[in-house]
Image (tube, rainbow, N blue to C red; front, side, top):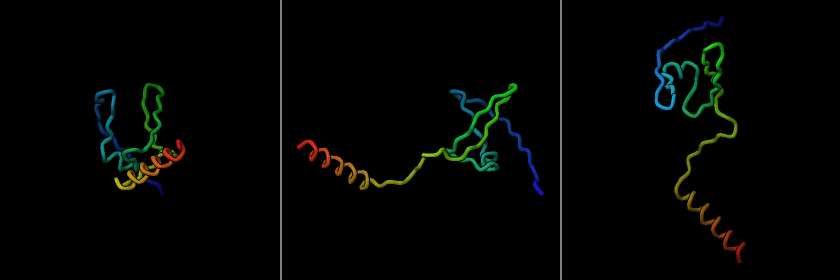
Length: 83
């Protein structure tokens, strides 16, 4: 048996037409910062449809040492190829 719950909250349009989804509603549908959403306009209504992470979007933690190491490696390659 599936029980459907309807949640309604009033929100305001902010600067640059930004809409902030209350945490309770975002949690209810499982969306988080960085997730993609489809925006559908039909019959004078706006519908937001969660899509999850967009393919190809990846976030990772990188240390300063890793960034410096890659920078040094690229610099060495450039110097060798210009010699």
